[in-house]
Length: 305
Image 1 (cartoon, helix red, strand yellow):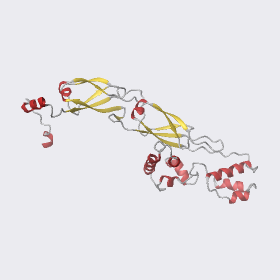
Image 2 (cartoon, rainbow, N blue to C red):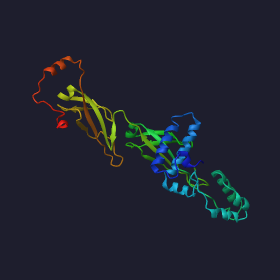
Image 3 (cartoon, rainbow, N blue to C red):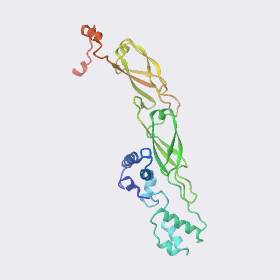
Image 4 (tube, rainbow, N blue to C red):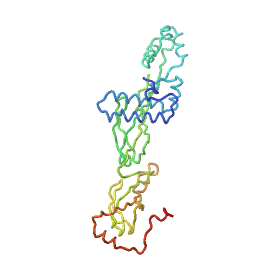
């Protein structure tokens, strides 16, 4: 497997942030959903996912830099391990002199060595499988209400993923044992799915609250009204108080996101935006031209003080 630093196009001294940004950029470029019939892009996505999986894990990165594991995350047996085989008399000269150009060469050597009847032939070399990572774009409402999605991991495995209600942007889901298979009967790695919640046209989430700007007519704002407004649970009817103004915030209790820990729901905060009628409303224009308010407003007074 190619060097993970080269795969992501970063240096060995790259920071965690630089590695994450490089992965995000490449993942968006080669994501299978954008290239459904492009095998080359699929292969590239697998490589960058594997590279990111190794380098984002501080311990794995340290061990790779120290030569303890290879680019695939497989264990590299220490020098003494090879020396024991070389001194054991079974394929000794071959084991002592053979170089390993890839992880597959190492695995083949281990299979022959442990099956060859040498002094340690009864032992079994095991290694935990490599973890894999996947970036899953999630629609805003699916993150809020929860959903089921089917994904295909970089190595081709298909999984059902449960997106929990109230899921947050950048939330990481761990699918235990769904990563790469282990070597020699070792445990399988895990699959890590990072959720990227897409923005909504008008809903905005902050913690467990939902914010939305709702336009109202001049008449509704001045005289008050009962209007229908959208929520993440569907439309509801609310009261606009008489004399409301642009920027005024109203609250709908328990119409926000359900907290995954407490089970309580946040609120929906509605910011009003008064929409003025067009200049073609001649009666209104004529009235305003003659209107002399008893209490004149000075909306720019503080700015000019």
